[in-house]
Length: 466
Image: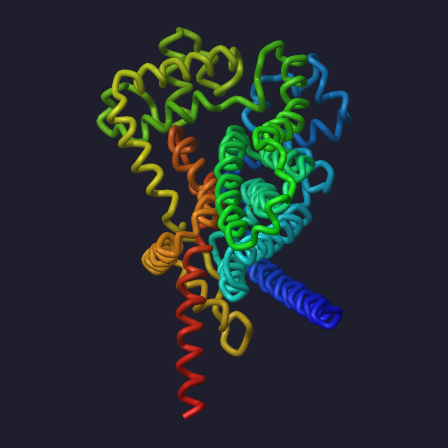
């Protein structure tokens, strides 16, 4: 008996050691690819979304000049409604890392975090599939030019994905061994993402809704085991599932509450995180209304100009949120929802079309090819990251999961994409807003490629044994 226990412990130790070594390897590859991307594009990235980046830096400078108290003072420059266009998390990072005038500091921080994201995907897939599929998934994320490119931009998009990936990994673990504190941390991680980008604000509801389903699937599996092992029938029951769902929601509220309270103090309004939903709702309608049936603009500047004319307020043409930004945002939401109520089927089609664009891989720069160097290996791999290549592999991998009836796996990998397909598809969407979808998309090609690799390996072994 002791010998069997010792052997089991030894196998577990070897498994953990192998996972650790693979994780380190994936991190190094991911970091190296992103470093080369930074080297090749460092003179160009500052031109991407220049106005948005300048706004983040302007707010970061205000924070450095005024200290923490300036954030909570209604008479400070940060009390201007124009500062509510984005959550303050990225500006805080710029201020902390002293990256207002030195881009590489924040870029290398983002590169490191996104390299760790490849490791987290590896860990998630390792919990759900084989170690081979997990390794492939981690390597796909490590090499993907879409992530490498976005990680060096002076924007918070890849940073906002990392807490969500960690939340999914903890959810995988927590549904196996439930602890209330783990579910609170899951919610808090979603809240951290919201400090960087407000897109994930309602995602906590999707995580909370997934918990009862995952626990139900776990109970069914346990019931089948008890049918064959009646000696375990006296095992203690799990705590009520609703507690875990509420813990996730509570964790998110706990992290978002400081922002909401600050906005109430400074602006005397209920603003959970930031403003901009009305603007993106209108622009999202305008994106799919080329004939302008509804007379809704599709760009920021057009919205400003139209509001200046319709309200007879020339100053509205200068900015989206100043003056009267909160009232203008509410009017935009009202206008957008009026169109949706009047044309529900048309808008449902808009959401479906927009959701379909989220699984297309963005065309981004790849590393510069140079003979006789590491780049000569990376370049041809990155050229394969096309929708026409990855999507068929993902569909095959998804079908494998469905046919194997891996319901738990399907639920876990669907939470984040389903959120973006249903919620983000309501408003104007850019590729960088939905990067999280693609991280999970790569889990399915990994299943397909690992199966192909395993089959090829068996064929080789048979050939060698003849």
